[in-house]
Amino acid sequence: MPRLRKPHPKARSARGIALIEVLVSILIFSLGLLGLIGLQARAVSFSSDAEDRNRAAMLANELSTSMWLGNSVNVDATTLTNWQTRVNSPSAGGLPNGSGTVTVTAGVAEILITWRPPSRESGDSRFVTRMVLP
Image (tube, rainbow, N blue to C red; front, side, top):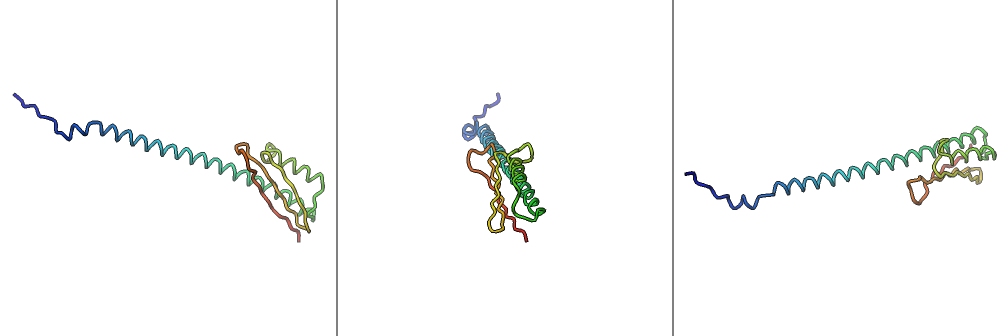
């Protein structure tokens, strides 16, 4: 008659270890996946902010080009009003909640563009450039 072997004492205490290892590995994988999702969200936010800054630079360049062509840092009221309307209109290449101002002091024009993306609760973004004609 075959003899039944008793299970080794260490084998009894090792039961369920594989299941615990699988659960720990799933937990580590899940945390890594959540980290990647957070990283992706931040990358999209930074990309959107860079796009807005690029648009602000192009709008400031547009007004400084008008100053350069007019050979004066002073801009006529119609051109300034049209430019400010464009800065405030995202559908026309402007910025969300955007505003643009021009301050002329001693022959130096300071072009200031501020905006606030809809996703941001508080704190405006700013872009400042100065124009000096030789």
